[in-house]
Image (cartoon, rainbow, N blue to C red; front, top):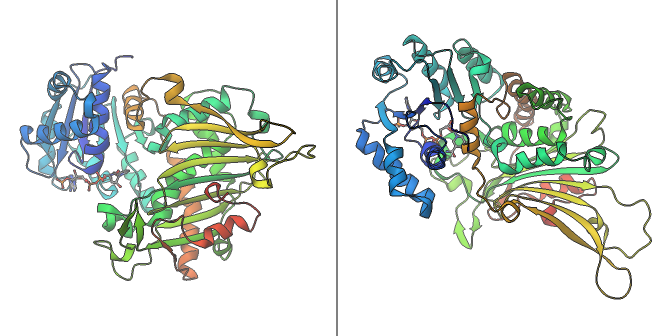
Length: 486
Ligand code: NAP
């Protein structure tokens, strides 16, 4: 494991859910693996009045919870020496002075400002840092999603952050891109000759991307009700996964080569506008039902959700890509809360044989299918037809599986571990460039506008199911079905 250069990481929102659940455990893991040098520092910040001891107690508790039996007293002791806390209210300029004092004399080191806060604080924090002259040429800023709530607000944030940091210093996170399986998908596509000839119209019948959550809105109702599934999930995670599937092979592994190809996909998405939106999208909202065998309330009964809210907790879309590679191949996207299972997967379904000489299973099961699962397990399987044992040539689908945990038998990095180390290394490949973000919002905004113009109300689905029946009809009209419905 390569030792990272010395850095100071200033974690804004250092007491928040993301910091505690993901970022600090990820840093602990990288430290435990010997990647973080002993003179690197992690400084948590938030508005709360906490002593260093208070903060350390919180971080220790979360590391213990998330590391389980991998938590070690000795590693914690050494890791804790790198940690400190500085109270900063992003809206109070005087608070920056204390934080900035702690950075003095360390200008030669990499400086990472990780903004794990609400997006309305991104520009004020960057401007506060600039006023106190702590943005050095070796500084980087990391921005969590969501970057704004539409194209205009995202442009404004990018404009203000871009006035202080150069584009090469701005790391816009979409943590799905840090997942091991997404890396493996790239390896599968661009490390083998096998799939490339088939990865196109004429061989691929259709593509499905599902990001299903079994949880409800949890503690995020306030934020979620103003956002909805389209902006919370499709604008970023689903479109990014679609880009990885649909992009042309980049010429090199250089940072901009892949981002250029992803951008071309976003530019090739057929716009969804006007009444077409109603035909090709489904909005849904969950009502009371069950999760893991227990009764759960509906979205409108969740704490902090207005009782007449029309925010969508589910969305399904039919997306078309106007390019030589993908013309005529539909991409079906869906995401939702309180669905039957937590599952993120990409499914490529290939064409049927032109003529069969054997007994085959019914049509849907007879097709070759590549399944790339990102959650809950990370694996890739290819469904092929094989002869079932016994007399006669009866074909049955079987899976050729690439199960990474079984094959490599080593722990793979969590997405945030990979992305945090990439930030330290200055590797921007897995982060979104400003033009990508802008293109994604430009495609998303008209969908929301059409929903508003035509007063498209969410279709109600029962918690614990796979979403509204209209989502099955959306794909069913083209003669296909979601994989879980096969
Ligand atoms: P959170 O739990 O509400 O935490 C927000 C953090 O910001 C807290 O540390 C809070 O601490 C701090 N904060 C609030 N107002 C502040 C101010 N004026 N100045 C300085 N600090 C302030 O939120 P979160 O879930 O961690 O999410 C953080 C960001 O990441 C959000 O934009 C969210 O959408 C995004 N995100 C979260 C997740 C996730 O799994 N949680 C996943 C992807 C993206 P004080 O109240 O003490 O100031």
